[in-house]
Length: 235
Image (cartoon, rainbow, N blue to C red; front, side, top):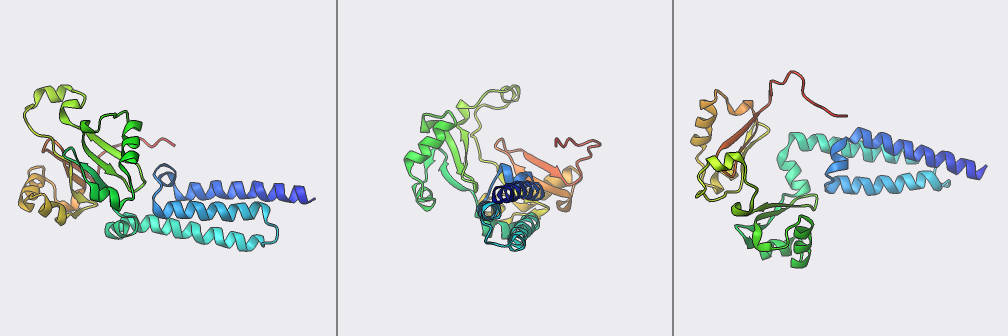
């Protein structure tokens, strides 16, 4: 009977975790951040007790699972609404290489050695650090890399562009309809330029979900309304 009881509890714990993962969404699985990591560890520990520790009441374990699930779900919704709260909670990406130069202070701030940086670069098939123009440590611990312009794959669009232009790092200007004043000031981009670009497209700031000045100097704009009749959503 004890074995059967543990079997039932273990299967129940597995089903409950599947349901929780489904509730929290795909983002939790693909791109785990600080609060999602903490939630996953705690939920795993509670589920293990749910499966094997018969001294703890099932109702108490279910309450604990519910509390952490709801907390994580509410936080994820708050992050969508309040970007500054998200940045304060999770932090922001750290630039480790800028313009081909290694930023030693940022390595130290992230407790990262040059060996670990080279290791992550090799995992991206970059064995010569001199090939890197920009490298960012994302909040999920992964490294994003942009190679130097002369080492990037050539496209038909590149052949039509002026090859003498220096590569620039993409600059976010609008997120979720909100103007990023700090990005404008730090990159010497006049607010009037951005507004005139939007006006020439017949758009207002409130219509824009995301706007970024790309590496080629062009403005990329994504509206709230994408005008797609049948958007793809692969389940």
